[in-house]
Image 1 (cartoon, protein in one colour):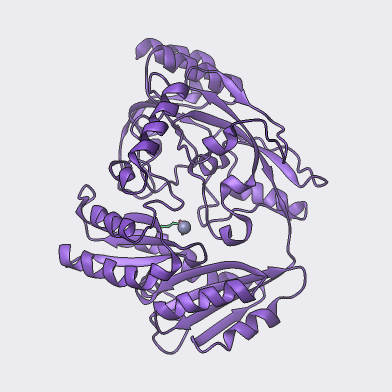
Image 2 (cartoon, rainbow, N blue to C red; image 1 turned 30 degrees about the vertical axis):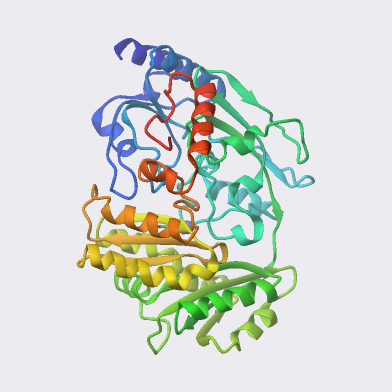
Length: 448
Ligand code: 2HG
Ligand code: ZN
């Protein structure tokens, strides 16, 4: 390890090789607080060439490398175990926005919020948005195929990518930037690296497409009697609101936790079981469209906002779930996808099963109902106890759902991949891994 550290220091300069425990600490623990690891060092290359040299050196020493962006992942995918952390934070250049083509090239360490601000100044938007925008980076978002709040309109990260540049385990640089929106010349590497969780290569740059900004946005918080109503309304809104921009769900438990943690008073005078957050955006004001939806029989109460302050106030109920839950304890976070029609049966059953196994546990559900994506957060379990995680994954699988919708497999779900993928598929994945990374140095404890 000592000679490797010297080589890495020569590549990036001594101030960008962190070896002291207090400097390494923030790269060794993830933001859920559930995962802790140990890094030999943190290395921060500033260019693709340096990234390549770093990987070549680690490859020669057969030393595991864990790529890390904003460290905002929720499945332990960027937590090192006796590995070198390759931090992308200095790969942070953003090309000028190409307004004519509506495209931009971002290095892996560019934070989402920085990209969003640059787009806004150019009258454009980036299609992926999420609560972790202040820390999540483009490289991490590519590697996890991040989803977020507007997948129902723009698709997930994969749908935004025109080209990717990446570095293989042995230091070989590959990929094409600029890419082309249409390019059918064989296997699609950008798509393969999207969602690969840093196990095949380290993404260094991405060429991304942008969308025209929509000047009119309105948001409504709807109170409903139950999850059945939410499913009926979701189906209706998808068909009847062409300007639908976000469609999120949460429940009374989550609403109360957010209210308590942030000392906010509840938005409605009565108690309700289920809440939908609906957002519409368009080139002309979509308020009339949204207002028509509010007359539906499922809607028990509603609050609407058109100005950014009012809209943000409504969004907070949903976006603050993660932070409010974290303030109570270390949650188990299970990000799952289900057919929409299974939502009612699943939510009932998941509460029942969790209470059967751990009567003291507290379960909070929320998520992106417009994408069939729920976040099952469970408090009151010990971090290593996987009994409930496994029960929930089995339940999800029995409904034909996926054990990961938008967060990835990471370490948490690695033992359960076969609940959703066939052994033939997993075997093909392993063979691909071997081609890209024959010595298995890239994020070796993640995914496979
Ligand atoms: C969200 O939708 C994120 O807010 C985080 O995906 C989900 O904290 C979670 O479980
Ligand atoms: Zn989410």
